[in-house]
Image (cartoon, rainbow, N blue to C red; front, side):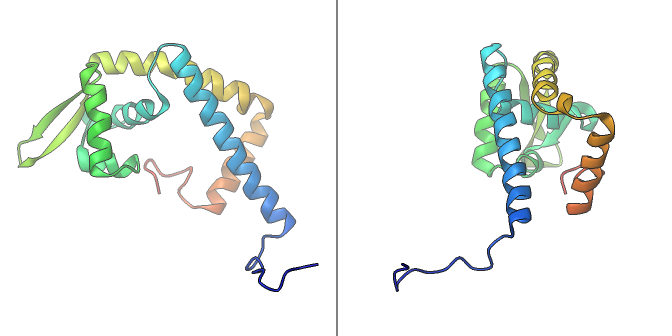
Length: 162
């Protein structure tokens, strides 16, 4: 018997909607948690650090304005500053002033940072394959990519985060 003060769920998901959403979230969280654990166990960088380095490696001159890096990593100004400072202390990134705006700075991937990223990529790629990609045929991988793109245009095809 329902209590009179119970508030019903607004516009609940259908079973199909719930399963699709729960599956996506659980898959992502499980794989990401395991990648982070394995990176740390290997004595490499954290998954958060990996995110910063992988963002920088794809940029021209392997550098990006701190504000843009923070936006891409979904971090506040103070959050990206702390992340870059951690990486800078290890020699993986350096900060350079922006010659056009002395108040701003660039984060620049160093050679040591690139080497750390490449080592971490071995762990990252092996883990993603083991826990996710190897469970699917290539045609299923391509089908998933099409479905992701259909659900959020640009999520697969755009070189930057939509």
